[in-house]
Image (tube, rainbow over all chains, first blue to last red; front, top):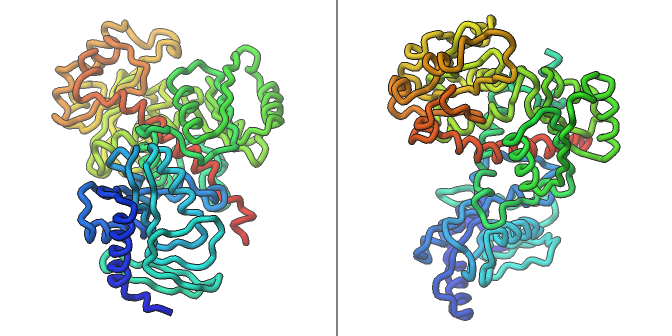
Length: 168
Length: 325
C-alpha cells in the first residue's frame, strides 16, 4: 500500500497529471470546481499550484443526493458558489475520495443545472474500491484497495492529512 | 405543552411546522442556515433542485392569499415536488366535522404535505392532530394566532442585514392585536436572543397580554422608534377590524404611519420591513416603502428560500424505523 499520509506528494502527482491531461486535450483555461467539504480543500491546493486565474467554484451537493429521504438535511454546509458562467467551459471537478460514484453523479447533475460545460474531467485525491456507478477519475492522487468497512478520512484544511479508519 | 409537542417527532425534529412558540433556538437557526443554502437556487439557470421529487404537496387555502400561496407554490416547485392548489370557499367548511371529511378525502389522494391557511386560530393544529401519520402540516397562517413561515422569512431578512441578533433593538408597529405575523415575529425574535423587542401602536390595537410576550409597549411612535435597528410595519387589517378601534385612517397615519420624518428617529442604518400587502399612505409613506432602507421586496424573495428550507426539513426526516437500525 502506498504511503497515503504524504498528501503533498499526492497533490504534486495530481498537478503533473492534470497538466499533461490539459495539454493532451488542448485546454488552455480550465475552470476548477471543488465538492464540499474535503473536495474544496483539495481543489484549493490544486488551484494554487496550477495558478488558475479564475476563482475556484464550490459545490454543495446536498440537494442532489440520492439518499436525502434517508439521511435528511444538513444545514451547516456552505452553499454552492460558482462565480463564473460555465457554458462552453472546460471544468476540472475535484473531490477528496472517489468511492461509490454517487457524489459525482449528484455533482454532475448540479453542474448541468448551471449551464452546459464543454467538458468535465474528474480529479480525486484518493480513488478507492467500492464503485457502484460507472464513474472513473481522469486524475487520481492514489488508488487504494479497501475492504467494505474501511474508510478514508481527509483532515484539513491546513495541513491536509489522510487517515484510514476501520469501520463498524 | 401539548400544542408545542405535536410539531416535533420523537427525536425532537420538526414533523409539522405550526408555530414558532416553544421551538428551540437551534431549530430556528437550522431553518435559517438551510434557507441560506437554498437562496442561491433562485439565481441559477435552472431554478430547481430534485430534493422532493415524487412528493405531493397540497396548498389548502381557506382564506384568500396571493403572496403566501404563490411563494409556497414556487418553493415546492423549486424542490421538484408536485403541487396542487385548492382555494376552498369558507362557507362550506366552517364546521369541524366537514373539515375532517375533507381531510380524509385529501389523504386518499396520497399527499405528503398540506400547507394550511385558515381564518380560524388553531386550524393547522387541528389538521396536525387528525391527519394520517405520514402527512406533514405547514401552517400558512391561522386566524390571529400564528404565521410561522412569515416569521422565519423575516428573521432571515433581518439576519442578512444584521447578523447578530443579540445586539438588536427591533420595533413592531401597528395592529398587533389582529396580527398573527406579529405574534410569530415576537416569538422568533425572543427565541433568537434579541434583547429588546418593542410593540408600538394605539391602546386599542395592542393585546392586553402584550407585556407577557416579552415586549416593551409604546403608544408614542416617536419614542418607540428611537435608536431601533429594525422597523417592522404591520398592515392595518381593515377586514379584521370590528367596531370603532380607530378614529380614522387619516389620524392613524398621522400617529402611527411610518413617514421619512419618523424613520429618521431610528438608527441611520435601520431597515424597514412589511409583510405586505402595503396600504400606502395608511401605515407607511410611499417614499419609505420604496426607499433605500426598505427591504420589503427582499422579504418576498427570501420567503421562497425559507419555505424551501422548512418543507425539505419536514419532509426529509429519516423515518424513525430507519433510524433504529
